[in-house]
Image (cartoon, rainbow, N blue to C red; front, side, top):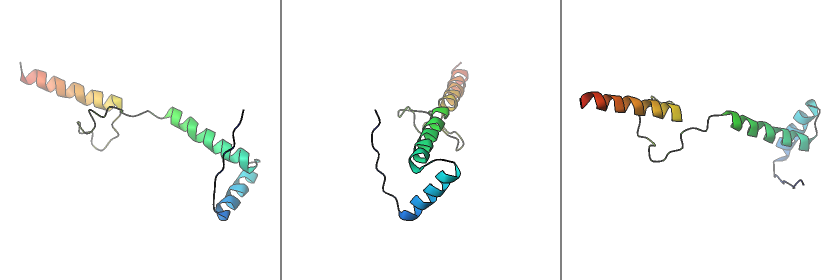
Length: 87
């Protein structure tokens, strides 16, 4: 079962959206649905990122996003350094 979605937009934006939809062979509803589906499918392809609030900001990552792999790599380096110093 479908549900109704109401969106308020300025007339100029609606005109541009209608024109783009027409160029793509769609009506406004199909175009908006297409954009939402496209955006959601892009989210599925992206890495979820690092989700631990406990370790947020605990590592210097050179301005790179704090993904799980990067944080784990830094964690291993830190542990290896401590292990070598305590030998």
